[in-house]
Each structure stands twice: as C-alpha cells, then as structure tokens.
Image (cartoon, rainbow, N blue to C red; front, side):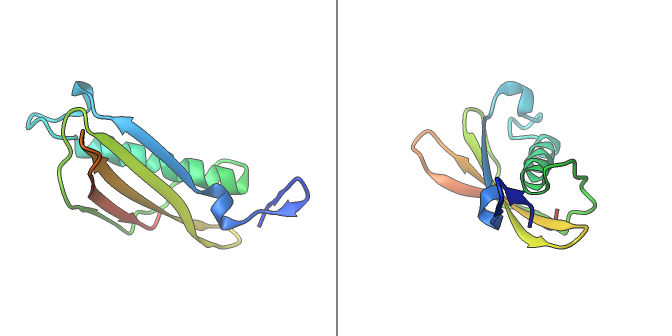
Length: 116
C-alpha cells in the first residue's frame, strides 16, 4: 500500500462519492439517462479511486459486468460510490455502485458494476 505522510494507506482512504444531477444533455430520446454517459461517469470515478490509491495515472483494462436495473430521469440525482475491492502489485479492482435519488430522496439502484 502506498504511504500517506509516512503512514500506510488503507483501502478506505481511496473511497470516493460523485453526484450528478440529470439534465437534458444527459438524456436519450426516451428522456432517460443515456447509458454511454453513465458508463463515462463510472469510468471517471473508477479512475479517481485508482488515482487516489496509487498517486499516479491508471487505465481501465476491463469491466467484468455492468447490469442496468432501473432507468433514471430528468432532475434525479445520480449518486455513485467507488471503492477498491482488490489491490495487486500491478493492478487493482474498483467497484462502483450507482443509485438514482428522486425528488423525495428515494435511492434506487440504477446499475451494478464490477471489475474495473
């Protein structure tokens, strides 16, 4: 594990949450979140988590699975939580959980992603 100020870094030190409000430019023709936009946000979050851990650049080598569960709509908040699940000498695995929060504060799972 890389050190922070002389102390060993914990996996939890790299955990990151990102939130996006859905606006028109993120919607497809069915007025739902465009899947490609969500994939971009997930990839960016995974990169941030990896960067926070290793302190350098990281590249996405593979996505083990991306399962779309529910659509997300205009003005909902997309809440994404990224965390490390595996650390090797030359690779790491990041899990990103994604939820949609409606105006009432309800969080529903949008996708589950494993294996960045």
